Length: 316
Image (cartoon, rainbow, N blue to C red):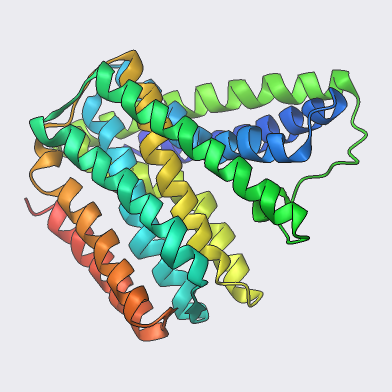
């Protein structure tokens, strides 16, 4: 049991650094090839943020553990909404930008609603995966156009803020980082999934519950760390954009790619968890419409709801 836990957290570390190396090396090489920052931001960086969820879900499907795969996606979305927003707003209340409430958040709701509708029959088929992937391409095109307009207006574009366009890392070094990133993601995902399945078997818990709980929390830790750091710096409003973007990419990109490769039997997730995900997202949006601010009290309620949800998972 100790070995499984060690492999799980070891895999998590490999996932984190694998994604970091992949994004850093890919971005640097893209700039050297003359690709514009806006294209890099909308593709390479966006993909990198969802890389841990993607490779974990792919590894789970490859090992025929659909429950871990779909559980990871649904669980990550719920963790983003309740755990991450809850932690960030407890540290510092979040003032919500009207653009997020009117445009970005409804796009996330549409993505979650699409997933719920496609999964209503208990299966995310390959055709469903293609629909999700097409929606992802449309979202990337929308992000690209929005970023172009923002740059033309002289505004800061969040997805480009952290890009180092003057990086002078050599091509050989970038290739090494790229290979290390891919290997880190691959082995990290395998370690995490194998350990999660072993833990589930040991405690006689379904793979779906393990995917929704410890696997989802593990793959959401980078977003959690980013949001907590932003909140301590007085930039907690970035947490909302972080959550919205992450949920859209988890739902459309990750699930779209995974389901396009192999149909997913989502079984019990349709009965309860997918509706909790959608209901949570809608409830938070209604709160934002009433008052564009997530207070510390809201944050405590979100955290309490997440803890309650975790407890209910293991009492089914």
